[in-house]
Image (cartoon, rainbow, N blue to C red):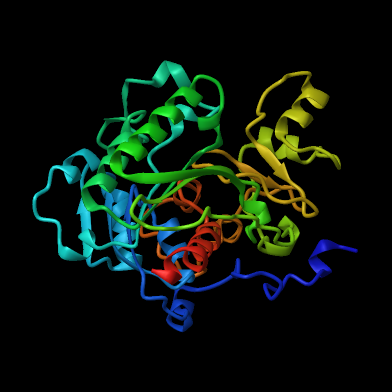
Length: 353
C-alpha cells in the first residue's frame, strides 16, 4: 500500500502534527506559567501553549529571531539580550518571580557530534552573520543561574544528544552540581521525537528539575506514539533543483539511497554530500537542521517550506517574517515534542501544586 493512501489523520496522537495558531484558542488552559530563554523562533513556546500553559515572555539574543517570536507570540515580557545581561537585571516583574516553568535551549552546537566539539569550547561564536558573538559552552551554567535568581518551580532545558558523549559527560556533571547548588533536584532524559507524535527522527537531551522544597515524585517519561512516516505529511510539490549536476544526480536515485553520497559513490566514485539526505515516503524523516538540504525520494525535489513545517510540527499559519523556514525549524524544538513533555510535567507535578 502506498503510504499516501494510509490514514494520515492525527486522531491517534495526543497532539496534532498538523495545526494552526488559531487552534490554540480552543486549548483548555491549565493556569500555569512559562518563561522561555534562548527562545529562537518559538518552537518550545508553542509546545507549552498546546499543552495549556501561558507563556509570559522570552529572552533571546538574535534580533532576527526575536522579531519572529514577537510576531507570533506577542509576549508580555520580551528581552533582546544575552542571558548574562538578563541575569544582571534588577527589575524583574513579579510574574517572572513566580513562574511554574523556566524553559531554555542553551545553544548547543559546540557539543554536537557533527560540530567542532572540544575545539570550539571556550571560544566566542555567532550562529550566523550579523548575530552578536558569545561564548557557547558556558551558557547552560548561566541559564542555571537564571533559575537560581527567578526560583521557578520547575526548569526544563533541552540540548543535543552529544552532550552525553565523550568529554562532554564531564560537563554534564558540572551542570548537575550547578543545579544542586541552585536548589534543584534534576533528572536527565534522552528522548526521540519520533516516539512522541513528531514525524521526524530527532534525539535530544532534556534536563528536568524541580525545586528542593517541593515534595515531588520522580518524573516518568515513556512515549510510545505511533510513528508518522514522511509520506503521510509531505506536500504535493517540492522545489526542483536548478543546478544541472544536482538534478542529474538525483535523477539517478535508486530505492535504498538515503543521501546524495549513495548516488555519488555509485555514479562518480566520489564520497561526498553525506549531509544531503534523501527522504523516502515509507521512512520517518531525518532531523531537520538549520543548514542542510533534504530531498524527497518521491519526486527528486528539495523539501518545500510546507515539508519543513510539517516535519517540525510548526503551525501551518506561522509567520516566519523574512527568515528562512528551514533555518527557524532547524533551530527550534518541535512544538509537539515540548507539548508531550510539558503535559507530563503538569500531570505528574504541577497539577498538584
